[in-house]
Image 1 (cartoon, helix red, strand yellow):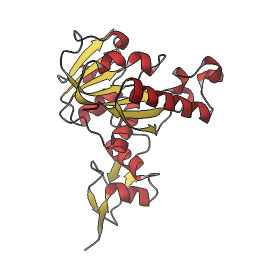
Image 2 (cartoon, one colour; image 1 turned 30 degrees about the vertical axis):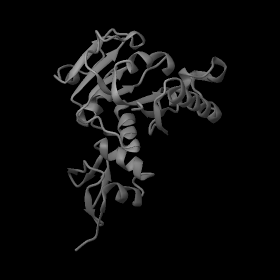
Image 3 (cartoon, rainbow, N blue to C red; image 1 turned 180 degrees about the vertical axis):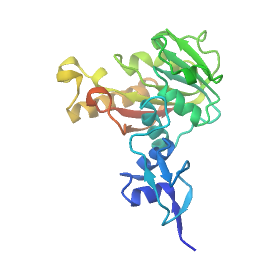
Length: 247
């Protein structure tokens, strides 16, 4: 009888993923197959000789942004299963899609724009569409239920300005996963040609400042920071920060 191993370990061992956490993200993104069968659990026990392949450019989300959140959930070992969720900066709905595919009971999709959310999500009864709403001024009139999981992917504004109103909607021991975008956090002189931040020192400083703000001023427990598996527009490096409300 062939020895069995976890799917994520097999992917990493064969060089199909750089690490187990990245293998887990690929599996959660729905891009790992054995023949025509999709491998949907990182912990699935497979024979060591099981054929595996990764569909490189394919992903099962309405936008590539979903790949970022899927990676974050896998890396930090988090799940929105059964939670009422709040997504800031929903746009097309990549994060919303990931939340739903991972068991979210309800998702408030907040965006200052209108008409961007994918139609399949707009029609989903689990999605509460909050269009034309500036997340900075979010109120309980927009979000009537205590929120157990908050996600954030916004542009042209710093996290310190956009997140506080959402945190006021948090239920006890709420979880947060937010995307840090240095190009919108750094000083103007630190952003290079084309709006790209290239200095690693700036990336590190920005991440540290957000971590200190969230863990200190706000008082949440920071679980860690992880680089996004894909870059943002123009090639900007982005980072995922995860935190949990202290009991």
